Length: 230
Ligand SMILES: *Cc1c(COP(=O)(O)O)cnc(C)c1O
Image (cartoon, rainbow, N blue to C red):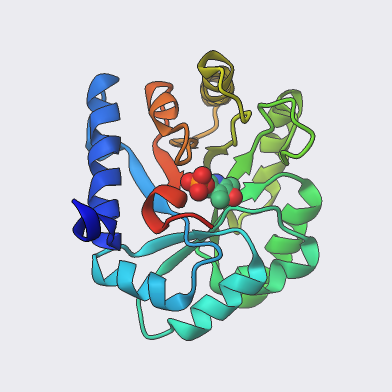
């Protein structure tokens, strides 16, 4: 207790144990649910400490921060996932520095990324962010726009569409939160029936990941529970 429990190593072990427990409770194999540590707002030294624990993939929501951290940690073999709303004028940095984007939500952005990726000679894994909650503040594609959007993404060979991402409504009502995750899974299942390969469902954060795992998340994005309060 006390000090020993408040280290990054202890918090990481606890989160992994809680994710594993949520998997077992849902009758799922813990090996099927990855954790994306979200290091946004924490300095490069903290990411370095996490890397020493064996973590090698991190989520960031701002391109400026991605730029600073990749520069400061260039000696480490890390992969970076962009999970925040992305302006098209940042496509150049993203195409150079990120290994994936989970917040693809419009064709204009797909177009900008594709053009820069061609220049870089790279491909990028992408998840399409869907707005499953009525909250104004949440970004993402409207659910009814998803089928046509996925079809159009076939025009961009540099973008490897791997799945869907969402943020649930912020609410104490577990059923309302769970409904967001369920909707994302149903949208994925419908798209798979239409011939899309979408193995990944990125959903669930520090406050709601057990519900997301129960609804089929293949990846939970955890910031606060690993790194502490921002
Ligand atoms: C910050 C953030 C997270 C992590 O949130 P926590 O509540 O700190 O775990 C997950 N997803 C997105 C898109 C974020 O911006």
